[in-house]
Image (cartoon, rainbow, N blue to C red; front, top):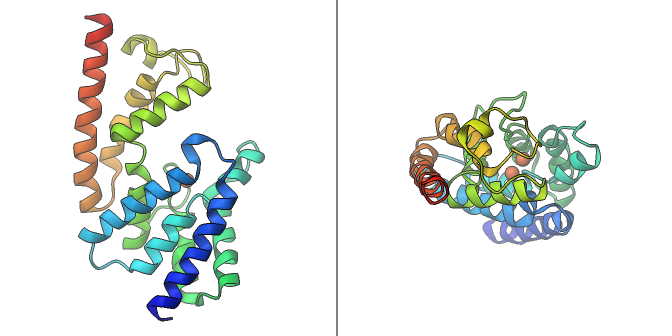
Length: 217
Ligand SMILES: [Fe+2]
Ligand SMILES: [Fe+2]
């Protein structure tokens, strides 16, 4: 497939994904998909041996099955289901089978706690691009957004945060940082992803240090 045809088909797929994710909640809407797409483009500049078409299509399709997972109240896995849905969309759009298999693998393995671990460079890039959207300034923003939706406290102490349960009133953005976000850096799989994650981690640390200082002195 030549570059012009690929670009046209890619736009068709992106429009379809956008329409599908229109009603998804703020932390996993089409804006998230676009941020992951831009993260993936950033990683591609450093990880030059990766297949660009696979990465671009996988980034745009990676959360296609989020609405389905939410409708099933978490009983279906959006990564596994997404691999199936992504393959069907790409088949309809007329992409070749080899590319479809590679994209589908990236979607299947992108999840933080998934059953399948990323193996190929493209799978690792999609995993890292998705994780980068959960840390740094955007990660903090998303954590407060989520905590607000769940009626959690704006902030609490480390003790209150770590001794509480998920979805409780103490499940603050700070708890999300302490329990999960501060460890994302260690889980990155590409060199480029690790170095961006390191910078974003330092920023989160400074942010919560300042917040604690302002509130608790
Ligand atoms: Fe996801
Ligand atoms: Fe995602």
